[in-house]
Image 1: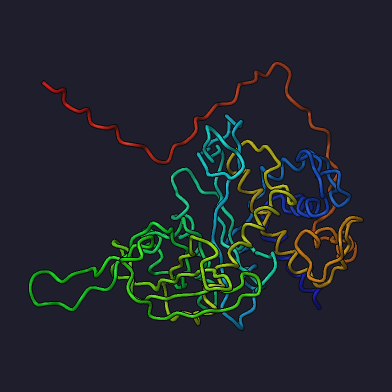
Image 2: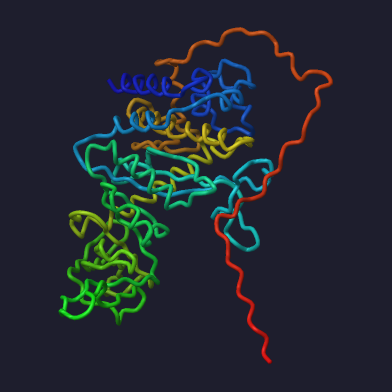
Length: 435
């Protein structure tokens, strides 16, 4: 039954790959079976790729994956008994030397350091993923798309969340990092049917509910100031509990109601403060974790803060994406080719998820056996699955030899494109000279 579900998924994904779907689908199988590759052409050496190496580049030029239908296919694999937990984030595909690639922007990077700053030149990609389990490293992307040069991560994430929520049967809970803990994100998601749990920076300033109208002047929009790093501005917590977490130990969680950003007075939120304590009740870590809940009825306080901890599975998927699925390996020449290549990453991740219960663990000699298989361990065992279920892709047809470049036809140098700067700083006004 489970193998039939995987076959059905593969058949549907094969149809939604658009043009050149035969070679594109064989390319995904080759990626799953190739643990190490030094170039994109190395994937053509896989036994499941029955075509020549130039077909890989032709596939990325001709294929048209149907993202909307693929997203609906992913959602069909999700259970409907409980509310889904979604996580959003973005990452960078570093391309500092690709001077002929259009729409390169300055992106944050934790690896490349340019001028003592954690930035790189490349392309940003935004992701909305379903977190299927309470523990483990599985994150299943529903949308994984490039952030264009005229968009920012908040705009792209808001649009992606809207697209996903329109097809979900129940209202999801979404978790976000501190980059999204700001007034613009809260405002842009007002009409989206999703609850938001977002981390807040510790230097933010919030405002309480306004006092009752006194009958004179304009009604107040804001109440007392609540600055996260100034305890003197805090009011008494509406609720406070202590729990013993199996990994974090003793944890104190405090809750305040009806706070808001200055620009979002009409959309109140609940503020959560998470502190790790030692055996004597003192702080183990000086900086607490601040979270904000924006939406409808909040889950119990002892549960809601732990939902945020599941957000880090998206970071695991990004690492798996770059190290095992070879996402950043090819040096593609256009943004469209990069997008079509990136559209294959969610397809392969969902295949691994559907195959996790039907594969036998196949550890390398230096690896230990696992009961709960990770995406990488499932990928190591996919060869036996492909040998049984086969592939929906059709066999290649023989074709003549390409005539190649016509003699005497001139070659033109490719255009070089500057790095796109999304924000511009206004020039400072010149101060008048003193007499």
